[in-house]
Length: 210
Image (cartoon, rainbow, N blue to C red; front, side, top):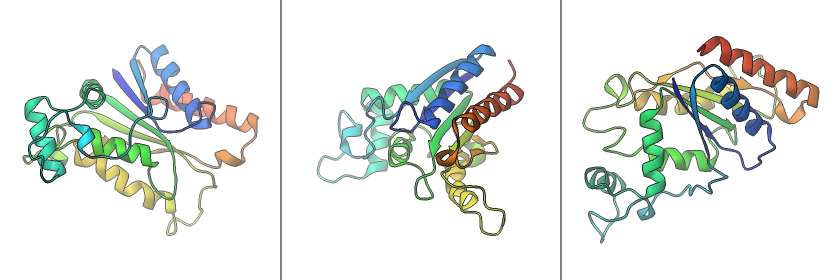
C-alpha cells in the first residue's frame, strides 16, 4: 500500500511530529511505501492565488476554478503543486496529521487543500462524492487537541470541527475513516506521551496490516 502522510506542525519536536514519525516507521515496517509531506519544513505557501500557476487563462481577472481548469488541461501548475498532486494520485491512504487550532485545520493545511485539491484535477465535471476522482482511496485524520475529551456528546467541539474536514475528504471521493483523535497533548507527561505513541502504533498495526 502507498501511504502519504501530510504533516502540519511548525515544531519538529512536537507531539504531532512524533506521531508522523511513528506512522512512517510503523507502516514502513509493515511493508507499506510511505512518503511524508512536512508542510512547515518545506515552507509551503498557504495562500492560493496566481502563484499556483506558470501561465494564465485570463490575466485581467482572477477566477480560481477557471485558472485551475486551464492549468489542469495545459500542465500549468507550479512544480510544488504538481509533486503533491502526483503523491495524492499515487497514494492508497492519505493521513492528515495536525493539531486542532481554533476548531479547524491549521492555515497551512487548509492552504494545502485549497491549492492542491484543484478543480479539473481532483473534482469537477460531476466527479464528486460517490463518483469522486479519489474513489477507492482512504483518508485518515490523525488530530491532536490541547484539552480533554468532552463527556457530553451533544456538546462536542471536536466532532463539529471534524465534520467539514471529513466532508472535504468525501467530496473528492476519499473514504473518510473514523478519525484518530489524541486528547490533552499539551497537558501530558513524557510517560503519558510515550504511551499514547505506542497506542497509535498499535492502532496502525491492527488497522493497516502488511
